[in-house]
Length: 161
Image 1 (tube, rainbow, N blue to C red):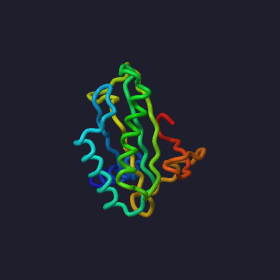
Image 2 (image 1 turned 90 degrees about the horizontal axis):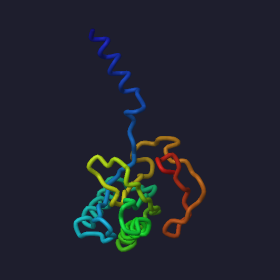
Image 3 (image 1 turned 135 degrees about the vertical axis):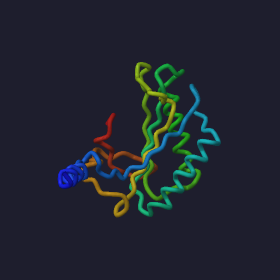
Image 4 (image 1 turned 60 degrees about the vertical axis):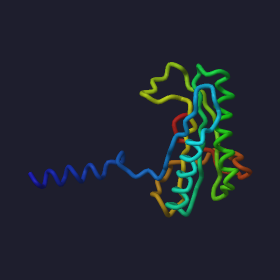
């Protein structure tokens, strides 16, 4: 019986679905129809960036995805203004360790949010090697994009790309 448990535990550890993901993420929330970055959200973002700088000396990139719900007024522009507000935060703090990539999306009103909403900017951080864990093929280079004046490969392999 003891050996069966050990074998079962070993198989769980080998399952790639339990693999380490180096990506760190947070969401910055916005009010409906608004692209104003609140003081509370600025503080959350500042603390997140400071934590990433402290924990990981090497940075690969930050990915910002501005989102809006289809029912918001001028949803596409709202999503673009939201991501611009967060991107401007990175400029104001003079962040230069890695590119800050940005994109905007509008979510359909039929989406099941499960308590969440589409009024946010999703902030993803990928540390550079050797910190975190290397997962070959997690981000596959695509066509070059301009990000904060730096040419960086685009992202593929993430939902929506």
